[in-house]
Image: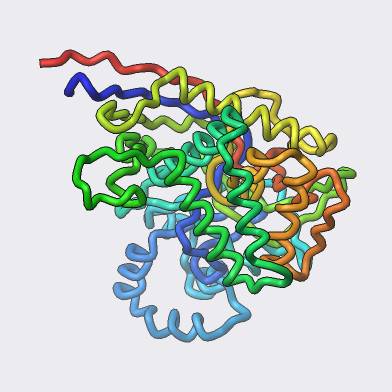
Length: 379
């Protein structure tokens, strides 16, 4: 490997369940829902069996009967565990789930975790880099309070006026973030006079390459329900179920930095993680005294369900009161049916959690456990 490249091997430990969505939801027609687990079946092998046993017509009829689940179909056609155990089944343990209607998880379905073409579980490098990019951006703003980023956000808010549409808000906010990204990370990397600064080739983080994670074992997965915990400790179970990496699991991946473009090194990255979470702790976390907040100073938030405030630079850009007002103004437009009062200690007014094995956890919380430079022999 060339001398201008440095490779770092990273380990994150999941403090709370981590969810990276595949966009697919499994329902009662495709899995066996039991009291403490969900049995997911390889449908290709299942269909091979149906063809062999002339069950396809019965299965088609079953699919049209919304009242029946897969367990009923199996029972009616004498398909017991000895048979379906050979269909490459995957068993997911259920977290402490509590339905808001009939308590039936299978009635809602489970959002699946992303997998590769062979069905193996991993965390995409794009998700890891997105998390780190937010951290690096936020840390830069915190460490350079006179950089003018807060003014850019305020100008975008002012330009929207009162009662903007959701579409207007999303476009304006996205455009302002793009401008901020250019200010922080873009440099004139090439001498071409026609090259504009906003061109993607001038993004210094093109030299910040993040790998996919190593594969995660099926045994390290579970199903968790979203539970919102408010400032006063009130718990609200939401009928949303996700396939997640369990707490206490190690996620291994690597970062390769090309110094021709990017000047981030081990010290800067670790410092940014600590800086970003310290700010988050002071302005957000410590307001939720009855929630399972992480005390690890190198905590970061990965994946879906981790919360709006952990995925943005708003609390990095403003003092807490202004950040609350700014966040509230956004959430009022995005979620008009919810209450997002400005006269509160934090916005959103709930933190996204879940329960597993009778313990409460923050969704998406991870702790940095290892950050080592890989020693390489250069030719």
